[in-house]
Image (cartoon, rainbow over all chains, first blue to last red; front, side, top):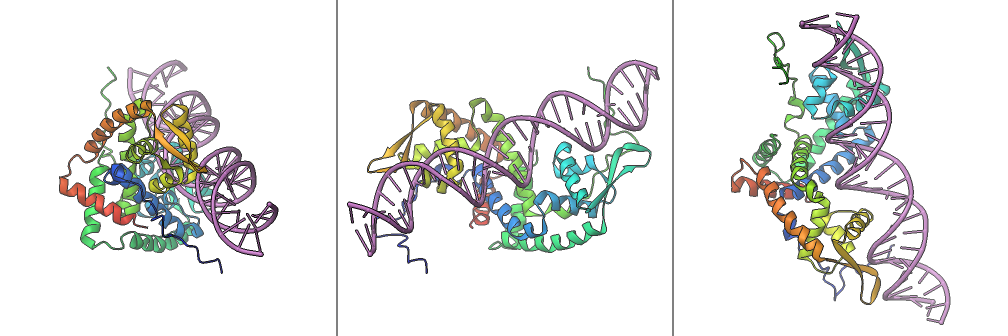
Length: 156
Length: 156
DNA sequence: CCCCTTAGTTATGCGCCATAACGATAGAGG
DNA sequence: CCTCTATCGTTATGGCGCATAACTAAGGGG
């Protein structure tokens, strides 16, 4: 047994600093929220070898068969140069295929492999759980309002 | 003149992919929102040499004179090891001072220098502008609701 | 044919996050 | 007193997401 730990002793009431300069700043609150979101995601998904970026690619490939890399990059708001690396690792793991576009050997068309589809299925289940945990304590209306506010904020 | 650019030609109507699998995911929306927030911050603040983390430290030091590193790290949700590096660079630039706590030579008490206070003043003005831009298109109620939703999400 | 554009790739750096290993100081118990 | 443990901070290292610049390969218009 690891000894009782006096935790909050009589004298020192766990001096909490004044957080007011940051408390209502969108930038700060977004950072904390995303930190929580990422940690929650990681806790559930890392056993599957999935990161937010990797899952997003798989989801988009299912909804958009034979999509081009450039189109995918723009949709995900990822730079093509970074998408290249992401796709390379997914392809190495046999989760997707890159095939030259017919009549345009520059472009790569992407599609899931059976292994990719199988992983995606588990990823979707995990993500549903992650979203549930993140939305815990929110009503459906609050959830929808939050999504819309974030969409507005990121309008560009 | 850089040539008209046909942009969307007759044939190809700028094929927009199906984003529905990500459209209402909190994780995805948070990422985009934070991307926008960071870019907005950077645009205004980089001439001052400020990043979100650096400004957060300065703000907290003003509101909490003689705060300990560990307390600051916990408040900002930064690991002490990362805060060390952040503080080292701020101290090198003469923006703050680290002094041993009286009667406890392990602890460092932090305080702004005049240069730090001067930079903070400009940083606060810039941040007000950043927050204004981010909240553009939101009513004060929507803004408050968003802050509260983010707080709830990051409750931990 | 030459040139410019498009599509993707490679390399590199920054910001933030996390862990592990460590040095130094303080405090408690034998 | 002396040792053991806990606290405070530092160093080193790696991962993830983002950005830029420089490059190769391929298409297409004059």
